Image (cartoon, rainbow, N blue to C red):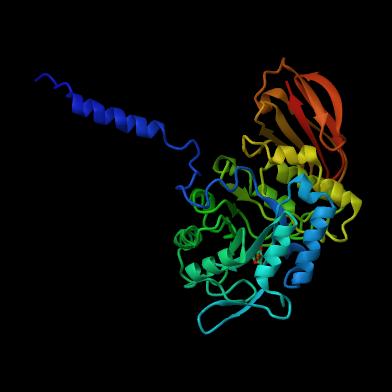
Length: 402
Ligand code: GLA
């Protein structure tokens, strides 16, 4: 029997099916359209109270931090969100409305959001998908739509949403509920998923949140580790290797907030941490005291050449291209075809580190210029590759342009 040729209707149906397949959004991260769309074309930047202040938050701290964000030049460098982490909330009232700590925030959240907005900045807040936050304050479980409406009425622009006390809740469903509640509240609010990577959020969080934590908490140290899972930035770094395919415009892997400028890191270590977070296309939430930071810390956080790598519009997360013991080379493709490269020496003594052109997708014979993004200096043109002496615990960051 000769097979029947498909009739015109069938051909049309197949053609439109194909067209539909081919016109799927370029990034699988793109959520369905709504007020939360398009909020994070590049990784969000800002400040969060937790790493430095833990529960010691107040409206005075937030106002002074907003002031410092402007006077230090951080706002002009691109930092935007001022986020209060855990401990601003104390109870729920008879109607289930969240109650703000009246002693620490006597003017209330609306007034504080207005103040932050008056500085040309955006305002963020924290809650938890479970019944209580990690510090035992009321969580949003069962109050998602009510809380989202409250945040919208206050003028909140960013919500970090934690995962403590979740019982048997399903992570994807729990975060999707809050996403829908935020959409329903109608105000554009960046949604920061803080599920610690326990259920591989990179596989399901795109389209729900704009960023998702990939690990347990970062700590104020270079390489420490504690029982409950907190760790120094070099251990967090190891857990990012291989996640690069899941990040892109609209949805970012979040290796946790910065410890730059906190007393557990030297300036050399802070620079390495910042270089690596930039090449990882990580959200950059400063976690130090902006009011009293040293000029060395301010220069790290506002290095515009490193920030340009972090905020590169192509939105491609970097990856580790070489590891020889303690010596690591990380690279990231940028929108103009150039590459950012971080040479990171994790070891205890100075060492020579390098990168070869084939490791970053260039032919060996290519001649490319190297620019040092910390010294702000052109270093010359090189073929085949390049190497440099890097101090212990330090990083050199360059841009390689053919
Ligand atoms: C968890 C989060 C931290 C911080 C604290 C607050 O540990 O991962 O980033 O928000 O809760 O209690």
